Length: 125
Image (cartoon, rainbow, N blue to C red):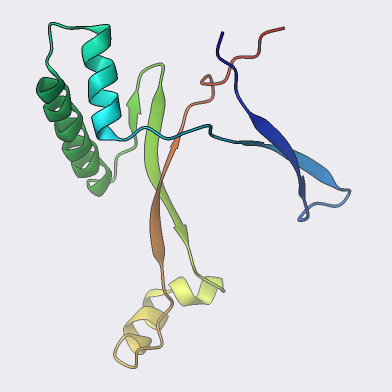
């Protein structure tokens, strides 16, 4: 039986103190490993077919995200954007961005993709 590895970490940003559970991966699986596993689950599709499907999924998800949509693969995962790097709400104003872009002083906005699904983790006794 498989199990998840995790550890408890303090959350220093809360008063009173709180803790969070952090997932600790045993290993990682990239596109090649996923394609091989998909082929093992369903041999009707070759490893190359699986790689093509994964690449197409990535392309379609990226297009949807860039179109301002959140993407959810039912029962599995959701994709969206998160923004970080702004130190003050004023840095995000149109006036600030317009006046400071030429001077090289504009806020750096880091765009990241988040993936989550609230039902992904199931606890068993």
